[in-house]
Image (cartoon, rainbow, N blue to C red; front, side, top):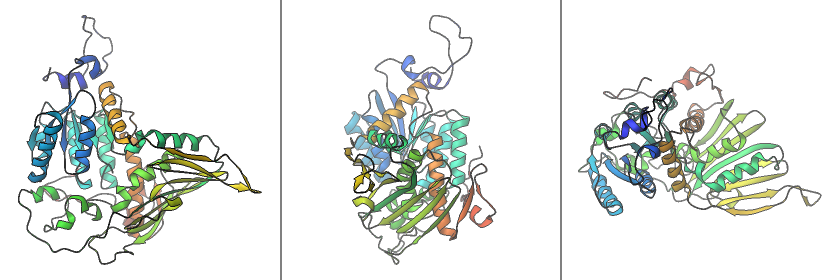
Length: 439
């Protein structure tokens, strides 16, 4: 069964009773394997969100983890023990993701690495015929995103990206209300994340690489730099080499639902202002304060973020507000409600009190991924196309900030219009021997 699993998942076959199929079709895994057989995963990057994703995977029926990979052997040992507690046995351990991808027992790959390490493992997983659950944002640059989307489509890979709010019922119910037309003409969409728990990063000196860490591999295609504890593990997201700050960290969750509710794809233009206003002397590079304004036909979308404080819109530290002529729908991870507009002291639409969320978004998202793998359905809740589009838009906001001007976007050609300086931000420069994939 093990040796034939990949054939069952990715290839065509003939009917069991000896009847040849005139047209070969992919066979769902559920039709090919026994009810008690396991869908096996390998995880690349297991420190934080990667392990949360693995835990959600193992909460699903008939699943097991057969491989873990991390460049920090201390993290790897801890997560191996944690995984053994969950499933009763330790997975195989790797320090090089390429060795994990050679493991024939791995059916699906979970990528929980820092953002700058999303592209290469995902593309290579597609090449080896493994389906992928990749953490958000899809890539750390727009060209990486383009490449990842092309690879998934070329190799017919089932891909789910970790924008798990796409699988959370109350978020989808909010979109249904928005699209019902009851709010009237929607003129702007407010999206925001104010995160008080994300405190400033104290400046620390460079230091020796911790024992057990393959730091050169951790840097990978990023620029060669001395080890600094601020750039490692969680805080990598505040440095342009590895991520895009709160804009791409939370923005792809929140902006995504603004786009989803409006049926938007690409904006016509974007402008942004912000900087390190609150903590100008801390160690982060990315802005602690940022507003990006996107132009769509007939409405605008605003992204607004702040680290170290919780003072967002409508009394919420994150969310989406669809501002219509008749009222505003506000949704966050706790639930959604409708706040009516008034005319002559009368509500224009009926108030909708808070509709609470279930808190099961991640588990439902993983369930959607596994069902897609079994059924060979690539049209998942956060498919490669959805995730690529949202990630591009988040990166557009960062590029507008870094160039300091309004930028006009040509979505058909994935480039800025008549702006060579802005276009330089689209394609990353990989450090040798790593090479940006060509798909």
